[in-house]
Length: 224
Image 1 (cartoon, rainbow, N blue to C red):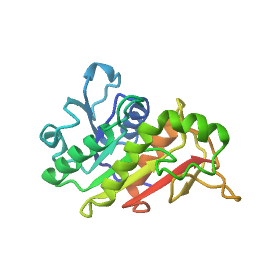
Image 2: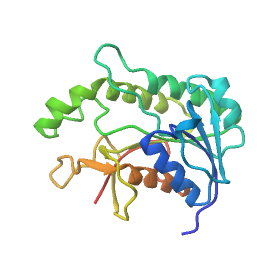
Image 3: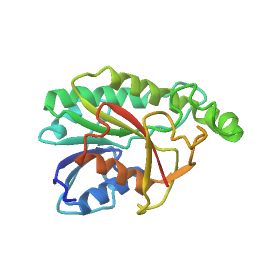
Image 4: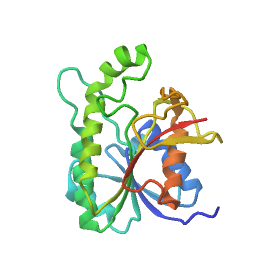
């Protein structure tokens, strides 16, 4: 399949998933603008890569770099907190959407996680339900708020990619299993899969550039 070469702005480019996304995008021949807080953290150098500094919570700051892009891709992540609510996902997304409208870019692909919807974890294992999910609930809650915000933006072609746990592994050639929902179920409706390589998440996100399969939808993914 020949892919169309695109101009992509990547947020969260210095994060673990973001770094895979940037290198794969460049390998595929795309032109990448990496929007980062700390340019020193991005170790990739390439003729088709431009690294710029911006405030991810400011539409004005982002707008300059969104002009002329075909698509915005976000791998931004924010740490869990027991003390206060996590707000980074919604605050950065509101700034991005605002900047996209200003720059007339209408495609965004972002990532959240399985189980963002509060009741979606009830089928999962005891360990996930009572140990893992409470630990990251503050993150999942804000991811869910961001998903709700996107659902209300009628003029933007958004896609939310939901991986389960993440492993720091490069892309494999494994087939993806996808489900429109908050996890990928097996034949008996239980969640199928526990962790996916970050390189595979990046590979799936980039595969959406040549497809309208999940426009204005959230898609849970895992590998076979």
